[in-house]
Amino acid sequence: MAAKDDLGRRGEALATEFLRQHGCAVLAQNWRCAQGEIDVIVLDGAETVFVEVKTRSSVTFGHPFEAITAAKLARLRRLAGAWCEANPSLGRQIRIDAISVIAPLGATPQLEHLRRVF
Image 1 (spheres, helix red, strand yellow):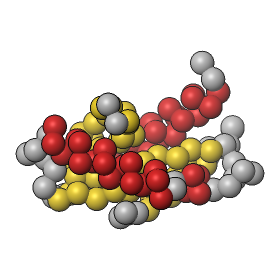
Image 2 (image 1 turned 90 degrees about the horizontal axis):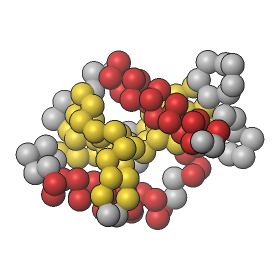
Image 3 (image 1 turned 90 degrees about the vertical axis):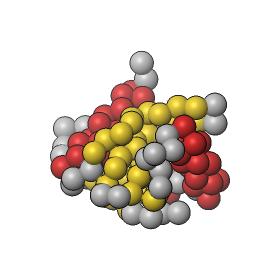
């Protein structure tokens, strides 16, 4: 397995735990459909939140949030719609968030949470 994949999984696990610690109930992780995948879906109060997690070991090649393009946000919106269709009782109020994880080897990871990115 590629180190990049391991880093991504570690970032998603850290982001999921961060969301739990901030009072969110995890509904799904790595939810897939024909259109793609949503990293994490949580319930935050009355809102169903679709979370894109971007992880890097450093900012040498840019901040993780820089990888979230307009096309990526449009795809996330379509995926959120697909999830709401599959789970109609849980998707009344939705938002899309992003979490960046900078996780250098042997150092404490840094997480940043942006709400309502789209």
